Image (cartoon, rainbow, N blue to C red; front, side, top):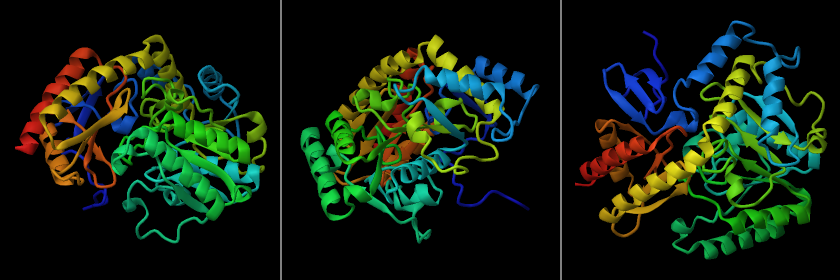
Length: 417
């Protein structure tokens, strides 16, 4: 008998039969409120009618038009549509399939454009599982262990994780920038440093937002030293944080932006955006791929961006995120085992800690399992897996937020009693 790899461990016991909006329907006959969104992928909800129709129409016309062999209409339309929402000056796009591929494409471009070898990453960042992406991932050792030797030229700088350090945000920001400056003096000289890559909110690292001072400080140093600033918007982009791009909260302009996950509502599509001047510095033949920019995925992405715009889902993410956060904070006030509630928009998390402030993954796991019993699907993250995160589709409404909060409160009671 053939089966899936035993290491593909499911976060929940649910076998999904179908999905609609923010709900999944299991083969067990139950309806589940899905606050995982496929790890932030189904941004317009499961099977949004506009996305379904766009994909169905495209499947009947052209499924695969390999885009270094022939061009197809959806990729042109998507390029134009993204141009309406990308940061000013990022007017050149390269599409691939996954977040890891896009990260590797960004690193390749940065090294070729600057002719410098080193990439600075932030402690706690997650950028993927392929060789280069795993080499830059420090959210947890599970992606790196037993996989060496990893790609060289990667150096690590602190992220302003105030809760982890036990400081206020201003102190954590000063520390992180001071250590970055120290790194440039002791580990990777500016003339050896091609880029720094950073998530606006640490994803797998625990849903820790950056700070305005940190990202703007990186931008200033990048400009001063000729270093490229790569902002990884794989999980934070397309409205997830209550702004179109996560970095919009902090006023720091990227040289290269990476997008994936919520871009196509569940179809595999990712990409990098840069200025045409920068993108032209890639070596001929260094960008390509058999399935990148797939016609059906591009059609789904166009529909996704239209839905995000027309249904005002960015504003909804902010409003519903405020409502969700307020409810999570109320639950935390009644449960001292929740040490922190944090995040931006509809990218929120609760961190479980022991009485002496240490990570408490056992309680987080119990609460996570109890949430399934309450009909609420969640995920954990963080270095110790003691952070329970909520990332519902951007179409979530007030009644569904309140339904989730009732289930969460019950799960916390069950998991901490």
